[in-house]
Amino acid sequence: MDEILVKQDGPVTRLVLNRPQHRNPLSLRMMGEVIEALAAIDADSRVVVISAEGPAFSAGHDLSEMVGADIDLLTRLFETCTEMMEAVQAIPQPVIARVHGVATAAGCQLVASCDLAVASDTARFATPGVKIGLFCSTPMVPLSRAIGRKRAMEMLVTGEFIDAPTASEWGLVNRVVPEADLDTAVEGLVDAIVRSSQLVVGIGKQAFYSQIELDQHSAYEHTKSVMIANAALGDAQEGMSAFLQKRRPEWKNR
Image 1 (cartoon, rainbow, N blue to C red):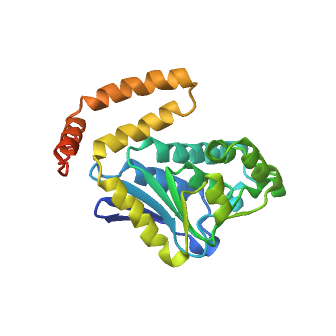
Image 2: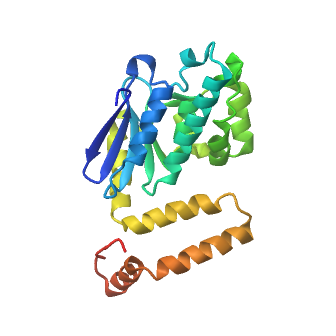
C-alpha cells in the first residue's frame, strides 16, 4: 500500500494515513487502500485505530483529483468515499480515530464515522466546503448524527473551525487530551475494549448502528431480539456466572 501504513500491534490493527506532505488528503487511492485494509483485518484483531502522519489528520478530499473531473470520476470518488465510511461502521471491531492537527471536510467525516475518537487539545475540525463552492453534503451524514442538527448546520453553512474542547462538548469526539498524552488516552480505550468478549463487542456494535435511526418501538423490538440471542451465548453465560462467583471471566468467543 502506498498511501496508508498498516501495522499489526497485538490485538490492535493500526491504519496510518501517510501522505503527510499534503495533509493526508483522502485521494481515490487512499480511500481504496483503507477499504482494502478494513476488509483484510484479521479475525483475531480486537480494535482498529486510524491515525495519521505529519501535521494534520486529514484535510479531506484531494481537490486536485476533482478539478476538471468528469461525472464518471466524480461518481467514483464519492461512491468510494461512502463505501469507506460505511466500512468503518460495518466491521465488528470498534474503530478509534486518533486525531491531531486539523480534520476537515471528508477528514472530519471520517472522525464522525469512527465509533470512538480521541483528539489532542490543539486539534481543530471543520466542514469548509461551502467556502469553495462544494457544500459538504456527504460529511453532513455522520456529522449530523454525531452532534445534532443545529450544531451540524452551523458547521456546514459557516465552514468555520471548532476547537477540540468544543468538539468534545458537542459529541464529535469522546476525549480531548494534551498531544503528549494522545497515545496513552487511545491505549486506555483499547485496553478497556479488549477486556470484554470480542464476539459480544461485535454484536453490540452491529446492534447500535441497526437501531440508532429507528423509532423507539422498532428499536426496542430489534434490540430485544439481539439481547435474547446474546444472553443465550456461551460468553454471556460465562460472564454472568463469573460476576456471581466474583471471578474473572474466561472468554471463548462463542
